[in-house]
Length: 259
Length: 273
Image 1 (tube, chains in turn orange, brown):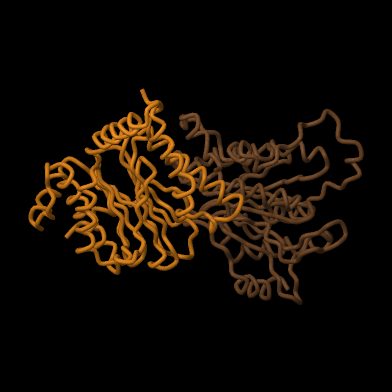
Image 2 (cartoon, rainbow over the protein chains, first blue to last red):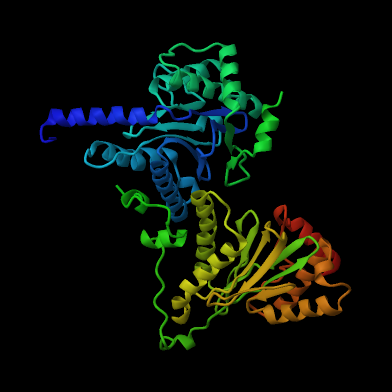
């Protein structure tokens, strides 16, 4: 079937459609920079979705638990062996994503007789200064989106991930407008949760292409919070510590979201 | 490209081995030779030096671990600022006597093992697991020991936040057996003298070690190290001229505290010198 090139293209396109359908219902994840670090936030019922990868690297992912697990384990193994054989300072998210994960994901996606990875990941690496913070979204086909500056865009201090491309774009335009990089953890959590809600509206309400209003966001967040819990984790900029990752405890989140 | 891992290639990661196993699989950790039935010819002639003094004991504020700073090769002092009391994680200390190259590598493997476990398994390794992990590293290293190189005899101190929260202290032999101690432990060439002092202090001193306050405990540690240095050339004790003091760290519920040189110096001046 796939000896002919156009069949291969067709097969890959089908695969893309299949994976997108599978991922569409994933709960969004927002990563936002604040004064003292980077906050990852999402809503969920049971499964943990934000993970520690190495001293300064965290990952959030949506997709099939088995595939997320394989990729998470690979990322930890790579970072750990690099950190052991060289030094923690030599572990770099950029290299991890571009040189190790991306090629594997691309191969898995295009070798159409095998199963692709049903996962989409959002990584962040905390730098010494906020300008050095790196956010990367790694797609199931190995494509990578960064927060880096381009000729026409300024650097962004956030990253977003959701089930559909449209919802992710919606989250990004929301964060571009609302996110203040120099804020407190409390305000970062508020913005992060609102960005999550924008992503949720974007991926569940068919055809939501416009940014919802403040009231709509607040109402949807309230509605979702009745059935889900807030999962938060931070990468701290505290240079005295080697390990910067810390999951936020439930009561900490409660205290931060209380009015 | 360096193909990442078994996790990717065989598609199963639930049962990944420990970090040392991962390093061995990737060729980053040399496998020790098998343990021969008899010692390698001539190995008796190679001195199995554990030239140092490490001591640790429990006091009111947790476990105090102290080590001198001297590193020797035979009769030569090669370094006078060696740190043999190593932090493995926020609550664990490994203090080493033996061959530095092996010991420091072991500490590095151990440190990464605990983190690797937490990151992959999404839970902290238990105290028993940590104690056992060091045991296994020593056992795996025993082939080198039998060849006359690479002996390490460590002390391990950690805080157990489990069902019975307490600071815990263990010592090991070169084959990897671990022993939990209730009062004190010492290792290295200067340890016989230290063991005598700690035993004496604990039984007939002003008060048992366990009831001592921090300043009293540090004083005992400094006096013990100074005594060890008096007769053991491989122990640095306190360098009065260059003002090089032993490394003293305390493990407690709050984590690890490293005593600043200034504080040790003041205590030394007041109650030892």
